[in-house]
Image (tube, rainbow, N blue to C red; front, side, top):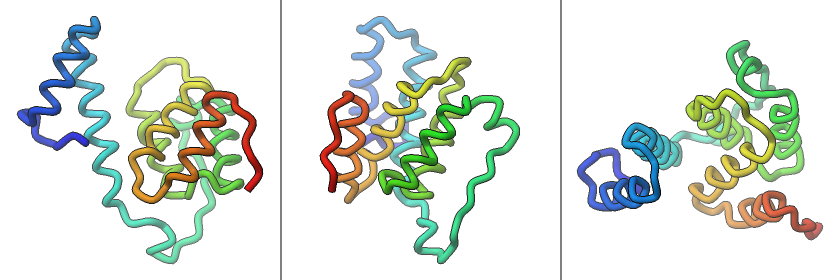
Length: 141
């Protein structure tokens, strides 16, 4: 979606749109960097490709930043197959990059939806997450 270089026309156009919407230059740059980092996560090798099995232990900084409801929600989504362990890690990194003082499950849902929509081949997981974001009843699969 966005290239790493700040002189990409799509990046400049998006920056102008965000500034016209009332966002400050600093917030616009942080948002564009956040999106560029998210786009770069596609190249990370998956845990399945490396043959690793994962058990997630949260670091103290993550425990301080991510409320227990968010951590539980993440692990539940992984258990029911909406998130892979790799995607869970991307979501955690993106949440920490938000540098928000108060995170809640609604914000978490949107970040998860953005991560899933940036991942090729994750249309079903993305659709299931959209149902959760918009509080639509999920159809059993």
